Figure 1 (tube, protein in one colour):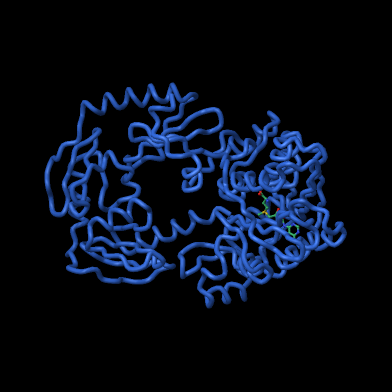
Figure 2 (figure 1 turned 45 degrees about the vertical axis):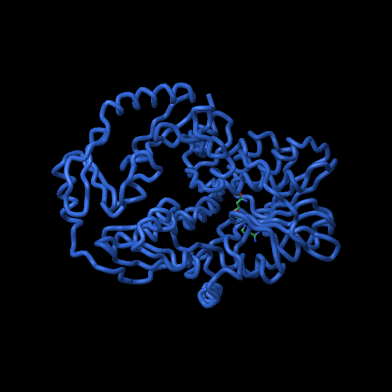
Length: 479
Ligand SMILES: C[S@@+](CC[C@H](N)C(=O)[O-])C[C@H]1O[C@@H](n2cnc3c(N)ncnc32)[C@H](O)[C@@H]1O
């Protein structure tokens, strides 16, 4: 069955993909049916899914071959990382094992961090709902014996713990610089020789970021900001504290680690070998599976989901099936129907060709050059306003008319916005990451390559461009 699926290489796809967090069931269902819950409710799913796949592989690397392990976790929330460790310890069949989880489960974001995400996390903590969910998740995953909870601030618990006694210390608590510095210094004392300290939330290293903006964010104690140099979002307190304590660390997808060698700290020779979303999280995410007939396929829990790649309403057109065979049959049948209606150019208007395809009318900018767009990964969601569609010919013509403003002869910088240059050229606002360096917008091939890699975006208006930048930066902010 796998042969007809274009194999994208699971590891690369998990790592590159914006895997959707769409839980298969609700918190109430999880409680009633004794299942783990890591969906959107209570912000139970804290980090991008790929980090847990990496964390599991890192734990395998750190713990394999040991007959006894002690793990320390600072910051547990609903238990996603603690259960990842527990599952790996069980998988490695380590007979003597203990995971200590320190968490205060109380409001820890200050009022300056006033976004809804922070307010709802504070609410989940103050009502104690999140602590209850942690206990539920640990219990239904059968890890009650292994996991020992210390319900307090790390500053109270860490000094009581025995030195050089832990095989792995994981830091995912407070993001404030002084708190992270404290947790790091204690972790150095607690980890045994040859063992590792690792942690979450290191999206950018200090050497990569804009230092003035960084100092400003540190002064305000901001939890999570956009770095103007790279355009990426990061936790200033975590970046600063790690740079202060360690010269260099291993870092990927926000996860970091160092290994103790006597009094020195080195970068472990860890190579990612098995990137799989841990079982307890699988109900909550759509895991990339492959491509088929112009659809992106995802595995979700026991079922499968397909999204049409070229459809403007790809998200609403989610096709859900209970097995891959059922999905393949369905998509094949859809393909046969669609083939009877191959794309054909209806008319050429201003700078667009208008094409009739799959029962809709598509406007395709001539600036894209000769294209087989419907076979390519690029879809309307990536390319508007170069490619868009409507139900009727009149509607699509009206849109083309709207989009035919006076065309500038050469690219013209309109403004710089959150790490991106917004450049007007040929009636389109191009959104160019400053980090991408100089981009020749007059070169068709360059533009197409960058668009398909997601390194260039475009919009019809400056407002649309700003919104696209904000959306891109939010997509990087799951944590
Ligand atoms: C980002 S969440 C942890 C997410 C968790 N590791 C996971 O993978 O789902 C951070 C947690 O750290 C806890 N926390 C923050 N500051 C702390 C501190 N100083 N001591 C103990 N826990 C703290 C919070 O209560 C919260 O549960």
